Length: 391
Image (cartoon, rainbow, N blue to C red; front, side, top):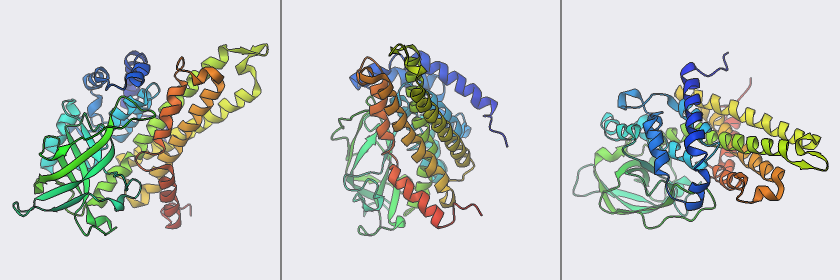
């Protein structure tokens, strides 16, 4: 058993760490304050080859897999959760295509993401169907004028990168609208310039400002059979892409927790109170020790989950291990950011320090791509079905 990262991943980690310190750390507060998309950071990612980390080499990517992207996101998110989201969006919408797409779809959509010349978004949630995916109301009905074609109508919401995206992977009901079966849902890839596609509004968010989140409206959007991903009713295949995303979201949690606790640790080492440094108090030391242990536990869960996903182990029997990483790491991020604010006291609540930024950004991670409660349900189901078992 070897717990060391491969040499090529260690080299990637070191290079992304330098980029993060030089390009992201100085920009993090400004990105949050203005809410403007950090095009300069995206270009730095593109120039460093980071937009293609998880894209196979056959389609212009680096072929670093889920683990490579996980390690990179951990590094950038130490300073800005927004930049971690930017890298995450190279995998979330492309996942269904990489796993279940046709060769034509892969050749058409993946190289642009790898090269950083196009961006993409992922449309699953709806106003009444967030965690309840089967409750979606977006409909795809057969196009009477085109054999194998479809006409889509519906509204997707809370879509990250919706403004910047050049294309979207979108899910819609192709079967009985009242059906809750997975085979009644189909995944489509839709170009931004397709007639009937619009972005009617963007959201005002508590945190993670800088990458727009908003609605995608589909009004009589016509697509051909070449836009169907994984076959009609192939939602189960598309779900594999979501399963494989768990360690990538978890990496955002680890990076944020590390950034917050490193900052708080340096602060308490220098700040005096009651005639001594804050770090000299045993209560402070124990709190730091506890959260440091939880961060390392989250890292082990996350790296293992990334390793599993890279082996194609993102089917039902592996879901508990993937969900554990996402649930635990993101909850650790919330805890760590809270501890950081508390250790700085009133100063931690002010914009003079980045702790309040980490505190606001952390909560989002426990909600996106399956809430902590959804992950707990998946873990429990795995245990009850003996997918997770120790005998």
